[in-house]
Image 1 (cartoon, rainbow, N blue to C red):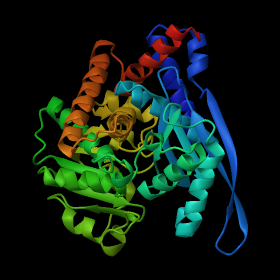
Image 2 (image 1 turned 30 degrees about the horizontal axis):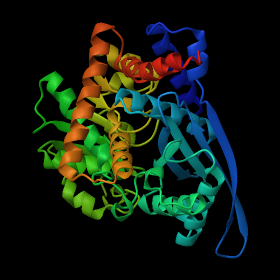
Image 3 (image 1 turned 180 degrees about the vertical axis):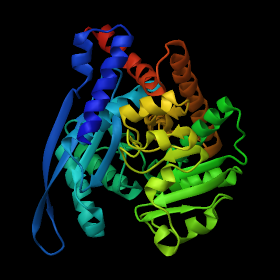
Length: 411
């Protein structure tokens, strides 16, 4: 993730220069405005105390409160959290939400912790960061290896500290605690909308379109489900153990039924292909929905898709972006394609603040409207300014924040 922070800063600088801003704005927006490092002592089930390190990065709050997930993962680093908070700013800018970007993380392995240990860690994290978060300051949400139960514990701890019920402090909560309908599937639904728009531009109908999905976790499995239900042929999927391919289309309901809670299913099949082979399959749409740096200078020339829609964070390097763009492949970048999660988190926050809750069809319609508007804005910049889709998305995403900074007189 070290390189991802640097490459993010490179594109931020390019975007701001294209928009006519100077060194002072670049200097402010290339790093988070605030980064808190915390140490969280947790009493383990065996009676020992283990101390965990956590972070909360707030990129910029000129537009409004910062917003972004909290991940529990052994590979969390300070640089990763900083890069992810900048990406959240860009997503919020593209979707025209009244937020800056935030992101949090704790270095731990939830798979090796008990239910009670996870609860104590979740509550400890909130106590450690409570001074800089809140419904009008910084609103957390679920991320890698965190879920609605962890959000519920965090909400309860925050409400105890503040001594009032504060559902708008956190999003991705269970419905009974003020969560929003449609939140769990929001990222995947947003990606499907982007696939639909990209196929429309290329003149390919969604029904019968051949789609390859790298990753079968939360986003990847919902994606496969929605695309299969829409009549598309999902011809390839993968997990950490390998990949499955069938040029006629895989039996997605069967695979969803067999996958374990971590998204693993390929280990049940004797005949698999590698992740590298999966990325190079001839198809209409390739969806990297796993981890960063999957499409690189080494394999970009062999990608067999007409369209790449990035559901994961940072799956395509800057050099690979240049290569696939020159090959005529339409790339829908991560900060645009995966904005569905933060859009529905925004809907949840709005519903919490007004105490009035919407049904799922209203949320889906609003999500579709905002995702398509974001796509059209980015594509227009791509066309009129003759820049690749990633730079166009960064220009669209950073503009609102830069204007807010300028009006406030910070720069």
